[in-house]
Length: 212
Length: 212
Image: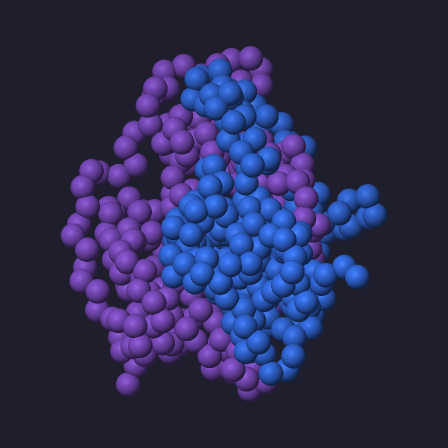
């Protein structure tokens, strides 16, 4: 997690933060093969789980939820009052809104999420957290200097908009319902979903504008 | 007492960085550690609170220096040793082709069966409460930056087993969890924070009492 390591062009932050030193890499591989040999873990079952998180659940699920909320005000009300029930209506296999609370951005309040203690994230609707969400740089400053952090993400808010940061320190998982970009009322849900970025549901970004 | 994982409000980790919305995993090591974690959790060999405790109690210099798959692996190794499955020296022996013998087929129970009746909820929405400071070694879910702060309860989140007691295997001690909202300008002493707010999930044991 240290941020003072050397970087070179070929070694991005993300790679550094996900690449153990060679001796640990070997030990991880040995642990895996030993646990398989001992029958403790079942590789086929685990391949299924990894496949689920790599291919079936991810921010595109969240984007569909947001797009439906933008397109259908009644759905939006249900989503805010009963996220699990509303998410179930969309019929995404394996995707549940359990423990997820939707937080709505408004002109008055911009919301963002963080887990200062570890990496809690709404897996249920958005898949695994991006690696930067687990970084010390984000976890330390998102609560103390959210406006600076937003600037570093390229987000400029009106001075009249308050920022509210949600620290996920227990079982509740927050997901942001961003504001619908102006002039998109005639778009289909699929087109709307394309405007919903992962970061806009974390609160470190805004939805894309409609392409001209 | 706290460890380095309790990062909210610390400085010195550099500017935030981000990643494009893309694959769930950046490296094979990241995928492999996730697979292992899922398998060990599913099999009952690792548990969330014990695992978090194991990672959080790594030497501070290790936690700070290493990337998260390394820290996860070291935490996992520690938990599996405690549970008698993979003991010190086992991986070295396995890398030479020797499989450890006489290991448990099933994980020992994480916790004695049964749980204490929940402590009654002492607070409700609208209460202004003062967060306490706790003298506790080991795992806890109290963000340092909120110790001693006064906030307002905005939601009651039901009863949740107290993570501090789960991690130490003291037992299941369900207690009320509240969402508590704080004014950023009070928490950080920064008048420029205006109406910016912070929100966190607070276990009842961390609340000192109603604020006068």
